Amino acid sequence: MEQRVKNFIEEFIEEDMRTKEPRVKTRFPPEPNGYLHIGHAKALAIDFGMARQYGGSCNLRFDDTNPTKEDTEYVDAIKYDIQWLGFDWDKLLFGSSYFDLCFELAIKLIKKGVAYVDDLSKDEMRQYRGTLTEAGKNSPYRNRSVEENLDLFERMRNGEFPDGAKTLRAKIDMASPNINMRDPAMYRILHINHHQTGDKWCIYPMYDFAHPIQDAIEGVTHSLCSLEYEAHRPLYDWVVEQCEFEHKPRQIEFARLNLNNTIMSKRYLRRLVEEHYVSGWDDPRMPTLCGMRRRGYPAAAIIDFLSRIGVAKADSIVDPAILEHCVRENLNENGLRMMAITEPLRLVVENWDEGKIEDIELENHPNKPELGTRTLHFAKELFIERSDFQKEPVHKFFRLKPDGEVRLKGAYIVKCTHWDEDENGNVTTVYCTYDPDTRSGQCERKVKGTLHWLSAKDAVQAELRHYEPLMRDREQGEEELDFIELLNPNSLVRLNGLVEPTLAKAGQGESFQFVRMGYYCADNDSTPHKPVFNRVVGLKDSFKIN
Image 1 (cartoon, rainbow, N blue to C red):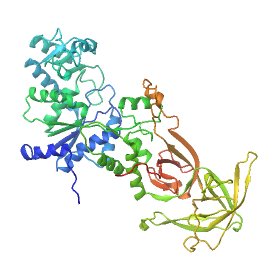
Image 2: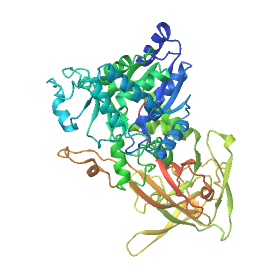
Image 3: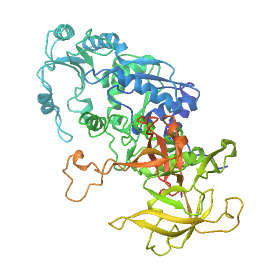
Image 4: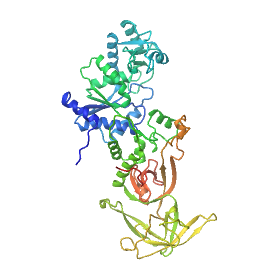
C-alpha cells in the first residue's frame, strides 16, 4: 500500500517532537460573532486533527476580545458544530478569562518602554503608518514618559475617555518593511457590555496582543492559523519575547479554504441573515456547518472532503463539486432508497380490478440486505412522474409512450393504451394495461424503461426543496457589483410533490435516496401532515477522480 506523503505541518511537528517538545498542544480559537462555516471546518480539522494524530491535545478557546458582535448563542453553536464533526477539546477556555493578565502584561511593557498611549485617531494613524513602499513616521505621542503612559492607561481602564480617544500601542519600528510591526495597537477603548465579563472592562486587548499571550500561558506548542497571519508572525513572536515567556509557541500558517462561487466572509454571511436574503444561519444554501447539516450533508462526508483537498501553503479555489462528490458517496453508501414524485401524472391500470390492492415488497438498500424491506400498495390508480410520459416521444425515449411498455419498479410491465388531455392539450391521465405474468422477480422479460411510482390511495403530499448555488457567476462588466446583486434568484425552488407514506414519519435530518431523483433530507420545517425534504445532491456526479 502506497504511503501517504506528509504535509508540511506534519513535517514541522515531527521535527519539533524530535528536537524540542515531545508532546503536541494545539488550540482552535474561533471568535463567537457568528456561526462556523466550511472554511472554519478546515481550520478546526487541522487544529484538532494534528493533536489527535500525534497523541496530543487541543483547547477550544473563544477569542472574545471584541464584544461588539459576540454572543453566547454563537458560543453554543460553535461547540455543537465541533462535536458534530467528531472532535472534542481538552479545555474549554475564553480569551476574556485572560483580561486581568493581559492588563498586567501591558503595564509591564509600558514600564519596559516598549508600549505607549497614543491619541491619534484611526484615520490619523493610517496616515502616520505609511504604505507598503513608504516608511511611516512616529506619532507625536510616542515619546511620552513611562509615568505619563501608566497614568493614561490606568485612566483608560477607569473609563475616563470615550471610545477611540486613546489607544495603547506597541513601540516597535515605524519604518519596518512589515506594516504589522509599525507600532500596532494593543488595547482600544470600547464602552460596551461583554457577554462574559459584563461591564468590568471598557478597554479590550487586540487579537495580535492577546492571542500569543494565551498560547504561551496554555503551553500551546503549535499555533496553527491561516495564511493571512503569516505577516503577523513577527508580531506574535515579539509579544511572546517582550512578555518574557519561557514557553515559546511556534506559529505555522496554512492556506484557507476557498470554494468557487461561495461566500466565505462572516461579515457577508451576517448581512445575508440580517437583511433576510436567507432564512437564517442554518439556511441550507449557506456554507455554514449548521446550514450544511440542515441540508443533509453528513459530518463524515465533510471530513472526507477536507482530507481530500489536503493542507497547502498557497491559496487556491476548490470546486464545490468535490464536496458534493464526498456527500454523494456517503449517502449512496448509507441512504435508504425511497420513491417520490415531483410532478405527479395520474396513471390508470385499466385491467386491474377495482378496489384490488397488492403488496409490493421493495428492498431499502440494494447492497445492504440487513436494512430490510418496505411494502408499497399497487392499485388501479397510481402516480408517475409527468416527465416519464411523452405523447410524441423524442428519439430514444425509453419511458412511457403510446403503445410503449415500461416496468413499474418492483411491480409489473405496463403498456400505454391512450390518455386524456385538457383544453390546452396538457395530458391529465394516462391509461395502460398490465401484464400479470411480469411480476418483478418472477419474470425474465425485459423492457428498456423502469419507472418509479406511487399509489394514488396512500401517497403523501410533501414539499421538496431544490437548491442551486446562492451566488451566480460574475459576468463581464459586473466587476464592481455588490455581492448582493449577484445572488441567484433560482437558488431555492419549492415543489409540491408526493412521497411514500412511511416518509411522513421521517425524523429531522434523516437522509434518503429518492429513486431516479437524488438524495434528500427531512427538513426542520416538516410536520406530520406535510413533510419537507431538502435535496442534498443529485444523482449525477460531475467530479472525476484522477
